[in-house]
Image 1 (cartoon, rainbow, N blue to C red):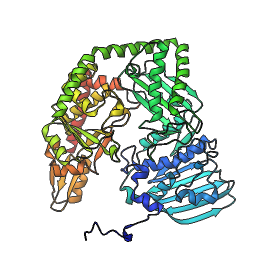
Image 2: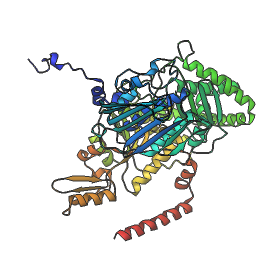
Image 3: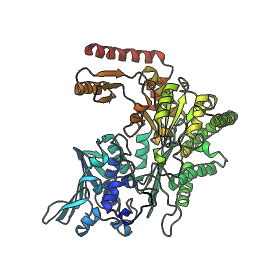
Image 4: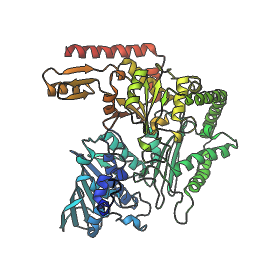
Length: 616
């Protein structure tokens, strides 16, 4: 009898709640990560705790939330009603336990399945939850989900509320660091969606007076064509404007949850923008002409939202409530009335918007013939495309590993060859550029179809018509760590900033960090990503170790490359905020102001030269 056929009672296991979470954390918090990415699991843990405090505020209890992060210990303190003392332990350790099953207690909350805070508990080396109600307190402490103490007190002068402290377990997550910029971005979103709520992070206060209007103004990378339109009603708030570039940028939320992958409400919002504006002008504009360059935000509140995963990044539900309209009808009807009213009352904005749509239409028609030829060329090349070495699983697939999909954009045969030989063929694709791409700053989208490299890259990503069709979750620029490599990196980033900014806005564009040095002796090999790391490696290995300076990706063998694009891969996400004036940056670094840029380079080269001289 074969081993496979030997299947008996002893092979059936029943895991308790915490063991299941610790063995399968991805089911509850998405990926693990080390804190270098905003969607790493350690930030999801904070969000799960914070969601409960936000829900208290939404129900009218507690106007301030305190977050303290020190030595990897996270503490969240709200001033809501406090968890009922008798159920405190159950709330933190018994699955499917919570008040949010009762719509009377929490009508429109995020955490509906009673899982979130239990996942935090199970994935923490230490987890402490304290509830204070009318001078009475109960504190329950857990370690890796196991209860270790339960203390009750009376006669406290503390204000009502709940305090949760936890340390994410390094035996689960590995070494990690909190990056405060990601936490602050998360907190800012909460304040935009809950005007008047004060959230303090290590003593720094965050608050919004104007909701989504503040969000839009804070995230504009350029001056908009017209002042943002801000509309609100029961259970819905929107803010809309247009920029000067291409693409569509959306910030969407459901019950205070940032739905980074969109969903039903965002699709309805896009439809409603085009439909309402076409009807207002009584012209049958192409929807793409209406929405090109739009920058908008939408927040809705629904009872019992159905998200497509525990991480709640995409709304799947279609109904507002038991007797309410569908999400689509709710959004479309609101926009049809409120946006139409706004445009009638603000003729200046309506005139600017009309002019923008007409310009978009004119450009689209001018390149329609070129587009058709470019599509045909892309289809022919794709049949025997040596530039794209595709993977098997894509973001658009209904596959558990779809979000692991990525594409490396690299230059030259040697570099692409090393990555191709060492990649995971299931989730990692490679697109090979032929030399330096064109500097497309200041050019129209016509160049995307006329330039073979750009046309084939666009086709590989599948983003010509709609960003929702993007085939890879991560678009990774992988170039040599030298002057030419940096230049190619800038040229590719300019391509996305100029024509497909949504790739950046939605958090899909990354830079691959590869080691600059290999330091080794007979016993150990260390890879170093900076001069500082090289010095530490030399000090650690001692005795004149062999030091190799990698000049290009092609010098790294496929066997070595597996380490750099596997679990230990280092990625820097490309992000844009209000502090990044895109037009000014592109004009300076990629424009024709040669003399100004030359002076900047010379001055910085002098600084570098002085630094090198000091080292010598």
